[in-house]
Image (cartoon, rainbow, N blue to C red; front, side, top):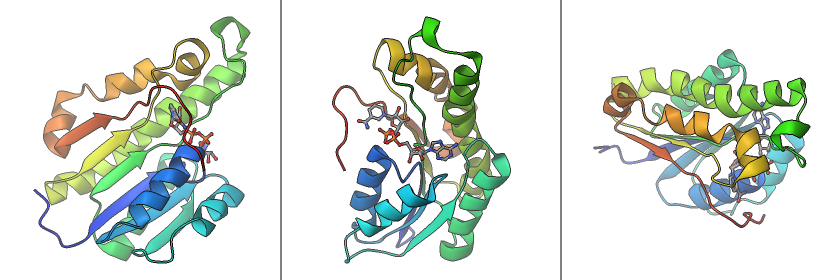
Length: 187
Ligand SMILES: NC(=O)c1ccc[n+]([C@@H]2O[C@H](COP(=O)([O-])OP(=O)(O)OC[C@H]3O[C@@H](n4cnc5c(N)ncnc54)[C@H](O)[C@@H]3O)[C@@H](O)[C@H]2O)c1
């Protein structure tokens, strides 16, 4: 159980549609501080400008989730600024508008797995040592249950497999696969 008075949440892909919605909601919650990260500066800035005035502390850092050192820097910022990490929402992702298996080039697959799957792995790698030391924490991996193009590009099955790691479940306490079905989140 977390008996700390404030909750610290890190969100990757915070500049996107779902990331902006999560950021707005969580930053406005009492007793919650957030670190918002994205690879795209303009998107992250747009999310920042949409946050409520009444909110906890907010830090931002540009980072590519495909690079473990950059993800570790985001987690490091949470520790440096807030002293702990309660929740990692690994949400950064890429889609392709015509992502049927037979339409995708090798580069599309490599990019999708680098961001969608390796990005989630990097988040887990960076967060687990911190959560293990705290003996608490939650990791939320966004994926998709949409058929065909979205699922193919999301590597959703691969991301879901990450949630089946029993040792990880024991260490972190809660691993949740936050797949959303249907309808896009609006900004
Ligand atoms: N929006 C929805 O309703 C919905 C539904 C089902 C699944 N999802 C899943 O939720 C996640 C977010 O979806 P979204 O609709 O917000 O997508 P989006 O495209 O609006 O946002 C994705 C964000 O990830 C960022 N990003 C891309 N590559 C990155 C990288 N290498 N490092 C860091 N950030 C990177 C982008 O800059 C962007 O801000 C995706 O994984 C998506 O599959 C969303």
